[in-house]
Length: 69
Image (cartoon, rainbow, N blue to C red; front, side, top):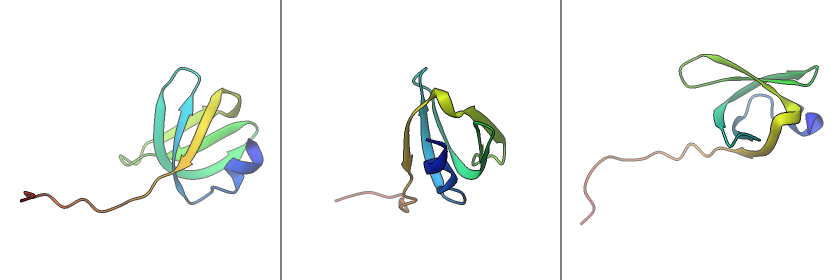
C-alpha cells in the first residue's frame, strides 16, 4: 500500500478507511506508515496506511450549474 501511495504524490485522491470514512485531497507525502493529504480547505489530514482499504484518483470534472431541458 505504501508504494502505491508514494506514486500518488501530487495527485488528488479519495481514501476510504476501515471506519467507512472517506477523505479527499492532494497527496503531499507518505512516510513512516502515515499518508499526508491536503484537503480543499487547505487543511492537512494524516492517515495511518494500515487503516486504508480503498484508494482511487479523483476526476475534477467541471460541473455547470443550470437547467437541463
